[in-house]
Length: 265
Image (cartoon, rainbow, N blue to C red):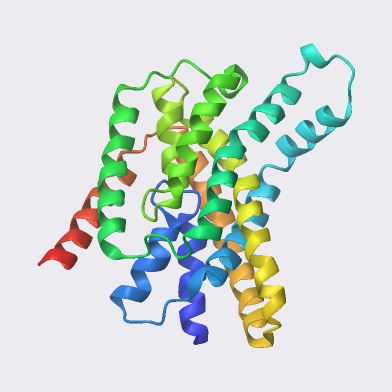
């Protein structure tokens, strides 16, 4: 794939991974609209690896606190970091199980513009509804195991391109009464095991190909997507301190409608 294509796709991935707009959908839309060769799932996951590095660095304090809590067995009942770590582990199981089954039996699942268009539009409207009627009483420290499980189940639907992993988890969290910042932060934390699992599966496939050109491509997209993702996370979290998700909802409605018009007209 030409270098310019890789740069564009890496920027798209990094900028959209943690926004509720579906990075995987955008990585399919752009090559289709511009008649580029589909970069395939390996490049998809490579750009996700750059995003993974960005979110790990952004949330390093949270991750350090939870890791310390997991290995420190004193005061188990009084440690909120331990509880949050356990919730994240349990909430990550549905998407990992679903992703593994899809990789075994389905392959390049639903990688077409019609499904992306409907998912972008439908789940975008649902995000807007949750942000409009969802209460803002709960913070991240109020997260319960049942809440985490429900958010984790919703995350599994992100295997549908266009649905948006970030959008689905934020939508469910908002319906459960978590404020915008807490919903977004929990979504970021859930992204780490989800991306790590997907990257590990495809990393094994990449190693087996022993394709040097592909390996160089991977290094390029990881670096660019890392920079873009870190900037995107920082801007989004600052934005949510003073505003809501409506700009993303409007974008998704316009994009989804445009895609469906492209397909059907």
